[in-house]
Length: 264
Image (tube, rainbow, N blue to C red; front, top):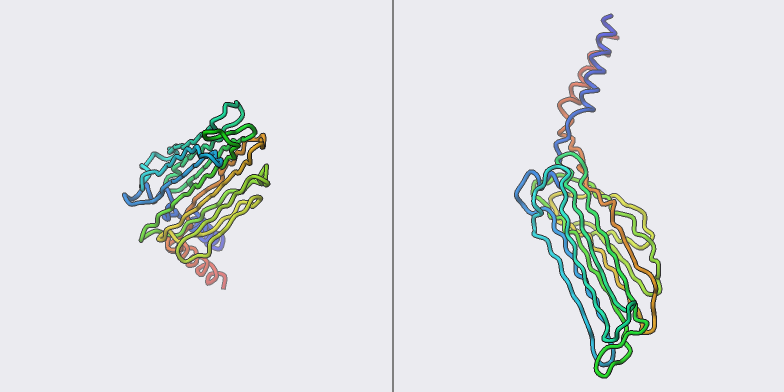
């Protein structure tokens, strides 16, 4: 009975150590717990038809406040930016558009945060003319999107999972690139077809995840597709700190030592 009781003590101590609370917060937890800069969302979309006799352009820019407001756990922040341009000529299919939709979900102090991005693009220049006198026009669509993750001098470590980068539906006319960069690290570049990727970051430093997209449509061309990229899969979660486990881990080791002595 005495040996069984000692084993019970050991098991209880070990179970307590494994269930110790994790005080390192997620990225939204940093926002939740302080009034400092934490995250920023940016996007520039530019659509333009161009010919030898002129250019028709639409440029839209989105730049969130340096601090996204604190939300209740599970709360979301939504924003979008859209550009659209048409040539001088009138044709139902000849227009260029790009829309970027952001959704940021606050996971609270313990659950992962979610950063989601949706990019939708359409472009055609089959019968496009621009200028006076009208001349054949080509179309260009560009989108530059970034998440700016701002550090806290007292921030712990966290993991960010970058989403899969889908293959391009029309690689002849499209280009897509993505990169995570920051102080003290080599840039992590992502190409079309890349699988999800998880990396551990230092919460005291700044990082930027940038996604660049371009679509070039020569005059007389109708790629006849709408490109859609969903960046769902961004997740930011805390890395447990050893200090959070130390007291109860010590208790487990003490229980194990006591049990060994009793057996001896």
